[in-house]
Length: 407
Ligand SMILES: [Zn+2]
Image 1 (cartoon, rainbow, N blue to C red):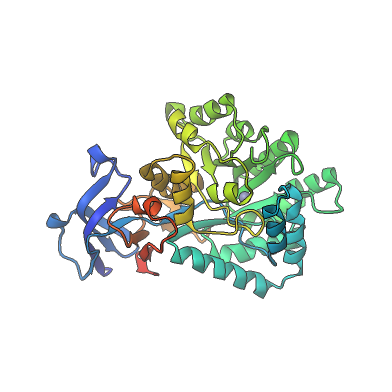
Image 2: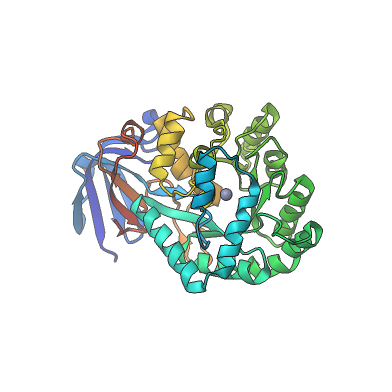
């Protein structure tokens, strides 16, 4: 038997489980949670809580699922301070800056890349992130993409292959696409759970992106798309057509894109999550993705950090949630849901029984209910509303990951 932990005197508990509190969409007052091993064993009113081996007094504060950051690029060398400074001085962003990081990543040792990733993951954990995805995509040759995936798998909860990030400097586009869809994918496939493509002018067009998605599907891998970031393009519709888990960025969407994203979930089907990246939109001074419109249309929305050295050098999900509320006009409840359950759906981890690459079977993440993974964060505030009401404040009071206290 595992030790049981009772977390009680929870002032506000966000579960996303409507069966626990139908009128409030799963939000309970004066609640308690019991953790057993790495799972949640019991959820309900504090007054009804059964006894446990240990007790943590939440002292009236807000408990919610740990953040699920479904989109980061944290395996890289160097940084791009100078490019950021130039952009803030008025230069616009184009996809080519990625090549600067590719050079620095290839030049870095395994130990340097691992230490940098470990530092960033540790930052994310301290900010309440209990599940995070990270991508390759700064190697862009077989050796460096495999190396990036291997290092990513040591620290991240999900690894995505992004060989189709950019055609590396000096390479022929057609030959590089053959490499990505052939030998590079073959070499990296055992280390990753999904394949991503940057579908954008200056990176990969619709036809090239479709080829990457088809090659991934032929290997039995899930897919994602970076799309509609810098201008309107085919990314969002391509993602839906290919059954991608998510399409991410989405600053430039027309009505047909929004309808396709919302419609992808109709009839109980598994659809494509619309992932917005508010910190990236701010950091590039681009228009914000229309998160309000996406939620209103019925699309399933996720919020992620897109932590990377070029366009979004933050993994603070508190900041992303605050921005989604203050700038993208989501309610706090919608933003919190998108940054927890939304991310989990984008990663295919929202139902009990998903399996990690090591073969371990996990409970659902992004929700708090019996059987789910015990990934929890406690805010130093009585309500999740304070995430946007007190932006920038250090509100993370405690974090449990797989039932273990990590902050
Ligand atoms: Zn990205």
